Image 1 (cartoon, rainbow, N blue to C red):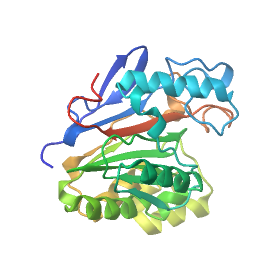
Image 2: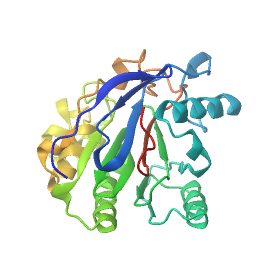
Image 3: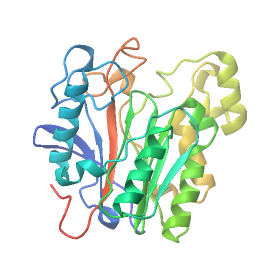
Length: 274
């Protein structure tokens, strides 16, 4: 795919989104902020995570609000939302048939941290509160990836990219990559042995000061090493830990907080635009 990825901040039906309004390849994609939902307390207000302690009814209502903001409310029953386990398992969806979608939903709930989708009208949602969200768009397909420190070390983005290019029948140089809001290297202090591991794996730029880790740097390096163009990677969001008024942050909020989301869907002509 040609051009460069670009995220724009805007509000749709009260939900604040960071999205590429051009819908590259027919893909509606967005990273959510924390406002515009119904959750309260530490989960206020658009918490999309169903495993962080929030009321299940509030999470369901928030997901309905997100779907409506994206214009895909009619696809809510087809949502694929993995149980994220900080691993490197990738679910691949090649058919939008009901049985295939149901099978993908079951596989995802068994544990996965990336979903590649080459089918139309199958929305994918992964949830975050400091880890790195990545949405990749290829001709006719997309991927949504959760890359925490374990997944980054395991190069889950490379594995998802391989599955995406295989499904789309393209090369990495045709893929656009959007890196969503995550904790910055300056905010992510870690044990020195972990910093040394990242420095050995990704270079000194991945471990600023010797006691911090820059996950975004490591993710970008991984994508570039796989053949993604440098100008095809968008990574310009503020640090979640320093911007808790906009984003949830496990580190910045002491471990009890909600989850913002990375969502994508490739819709048939005429759908998914707002």
